[in-house]
Amino acid sequence: MVELLAAKTEAGESIATRLGRSQVLYAPYVLDGEVVSALLGLRRGGKITEREADAAAANFRAFPLERHDVLPLWPRIKKLHASLSAYDAQYVALAELLGVSLVTADARIARSGTARCDIEVFAAPPSS
Image 1 (cartoon, rainbow, N blue to C red):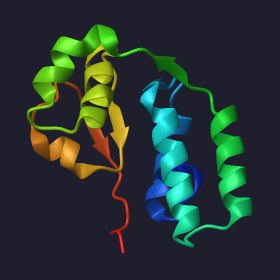
Image 2 (cartoon, rainbow, N blue to C red):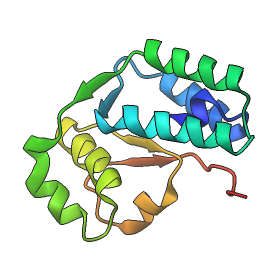
Image 3 (spheres, helix red, strand yellow):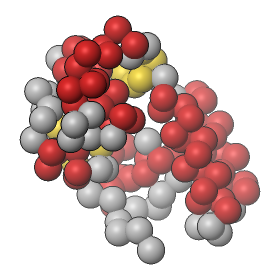
Image 4 (cartoon, rainbow, N blue to C red):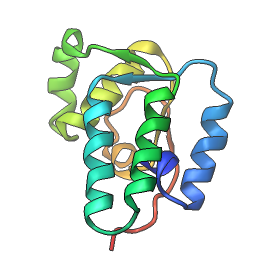
């Protein structure tokens, strides 16, 4: 989501194109905190201006997302956590439950080989 909202990269453009083909977008509630954390980190690191961070936050707030509670997915999240972070496991478990593809810029999720859903990876630029 941060690639889409704040990064001026090919990955961000590709994700925008991909998500534009979706009628409904789903995310666990944790996405809100992750976006806020990432935008503040980009701002603190001088990668985006305060104006860009504010615009990205406003765009995210207006983004058409259907947010989901993942506590009912606890058993699957625990199993996925053997290979994924607790955060990533939430996204995977939700995509599995809904029978949708997981769209991400994090190739580690696909490399884990544990997901039972399609994973579409849009390469993010290397961190500096």
